[in-house]
Length: 215
Image (cartoon, rainbow, N blue to C red; front, side, top):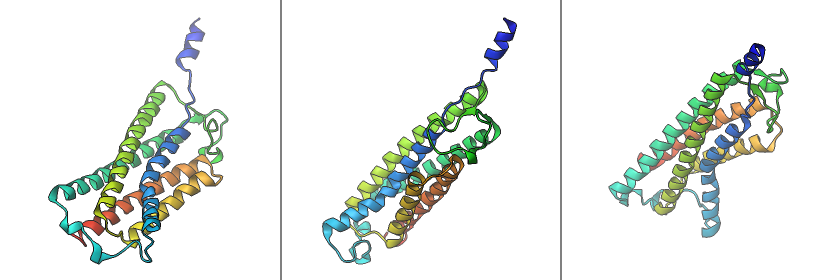
């Protein structure tokens, strides 16, 4: 009986971290969807130069409350992506230190549900679940902020600089690589982190474009 208790107390669980990476890709896709928004507006307006026309900028005519709302969106997006990066780095450290059912490394495991099976003790499992919950909450917030940002861009009724469009296209291409090519878990996980850096750069492009040039 004592031996059975030892086995139970040392039991290890194998949660699936693929779901966390997919949640992050979805949140990043919300920011990348700005590219689709711009392409849709181009199609509707049938303009030859659809993305940039500084003479048409209406930013300077907007109210203080509107500008405050815009700054708030960008600030929250920055903070959200930074927090998301931190959670992924913590998860990376955890997954790098534990064992796996088949004894392989993360770089040898395909990015598929059920393929990545880390063996976690009670303490590590609690940390994993905490990271998972926090990532899901952050991803929901980021998605809502991106939706709000797109509404702001639409309300401005002005053209967007080609640098912003190019950056969102770059992000979209990186995300499509993660879901459209055969990659191992480590490659997709590292790509998640690179996409977050690109997302932060995109936010900075948007901030500069609207505050420095057109205020």
